[in-house]
Image (cartoon, rainbow, N blue to C red; front, side, top):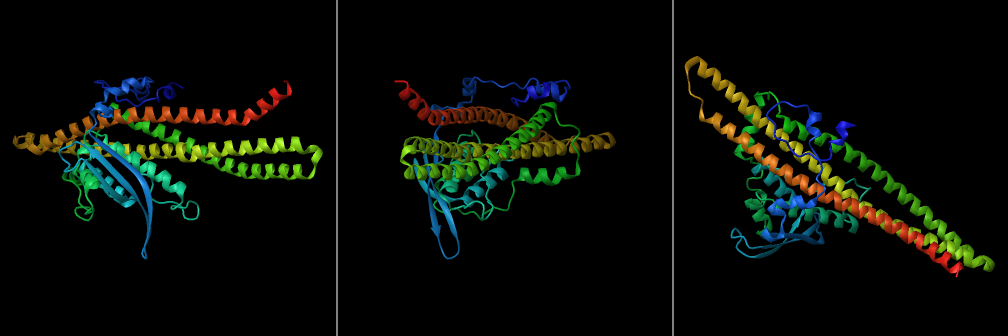
Length: 390
């Protein structure tokens, strides 16, 4: 449909006249040329001065709890840091603390999501090597996204997270910034007139993108489950042929050939399933959570606009009654809305650039894995055929 064709991107558009959502969508085109994304200087290695890595997970067991810590390594030339290199250990709740602090102190910016904290007991072992490895990769991606951001990377809470031996997480944890506090409480009594068209387009795009990713995630989970069940049957199937070959000499060679082919299929399918569970699904989950983070910033922007419109309307009424000048707080609210708009647009562009690169890499990698699978499965058949015709 016309609307579907316009959902390839979500680049905000400048417009001074009202426009329908569908016409805005038609202008949201995907730029496949990744070189265009290089216009963001913070994505360029030459301009980066803060490098972070999350690795080396370790399990800690005490009488009270069992938990995993990760090594966080930092290299930097920034003067805000006392040393050029740091190495600290952090657990998941420390990353969660950092994200909360960033969200509270930078309410106008998009904060990258963390991997989900809770897992279903009895379904996923949160101390298994596979789960810990997947979580470590997600935490590494989260921290790299923050470190590459032109504003978030200078946040003092990030500095403390990367450099402090022990985090003082209690201090100020329950306090919100003045900006966030005023938006929550003051805007509560106001209703926004209308969200600007460009932000309406963002919201519509996020809703549709969320539905698409949710559907793909559900289908992929189902495929992974069916592959696991098929793999169990396939292993048993191959074992039967191997056993049969040992008891019937006349058929030994063809039976061993079938058993070998089945083993090759099992190995290839294991690789395919591992790629889906450790590489494909985590990216889907990250972007589903990213969408919620972006929607949250949009809601905060709307509250800020509602506060400004409400205060402005009240000030205009007072001025008409007793010629009172427009108070300074109205101008501050206007500045806040403009700040929200500018920061949200910049973060949207950065998010779209990351999304294009991530999904191009993800889908290309998935295609390569499937090609490798079928090549591996078909190679014994090809070799056998060539041998027969020699």
